[in-house]
Image (cartoon, rainbow, N blue to C red; front, side, top):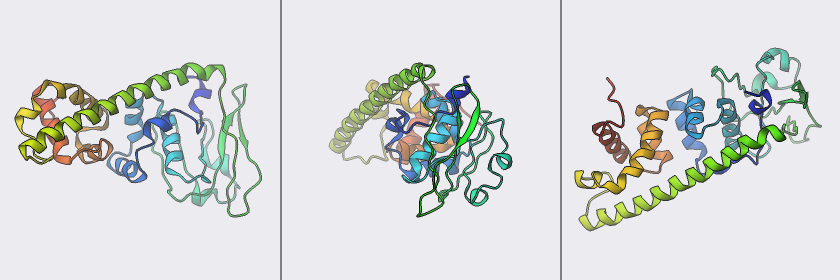
Length: 248
């Protein structure tokens, strides 16, 4: 993979549209449940893991908070030795190999490691703001090499939007049926689960369960805005239809 692609840090990136409705609390819950969440979300969104790490962190942060992107070839101490506030507030993003990274919710140090047009790394910084130890730098924006990826992201965005729209329609239909039967959202009967028009929604949730892990039902309920019991019902139903392998 082109090293420039690994260091894309563009706030206009379509990933923001895809995950803009995921709140800080929901993402932190997902992190707590699975520290390697970047790899799993990357699988869902078809993005590189480092890109997911960076853009989720920007999404979680405040406007004045930037992000630190560290090249695989640079060690943290070497890159930041002598830099004010780095030791206490550094947000580390390691390699695409999936090394563990740490999140500091209130970090203030902001330094971006970027690539120039020749693929060489450089640390760029501008003057600090008076109100804190913030440093702002312009993110690296790829030219031609990034256009194909951007097109993929936009296509993915449209697909996700279609998924969300379909799920909302199905939820509305379910609510109508449940209200007529005086049932609750958490107690879906077997007849409703067997309806053919739910198979599309099952496939969407099956994909999320496969990527995020079966034990993440509580987090899935937040991400999909569904009741915990409903998610559990879907997991059981998917197993019965052999869409999801039964585990120990």
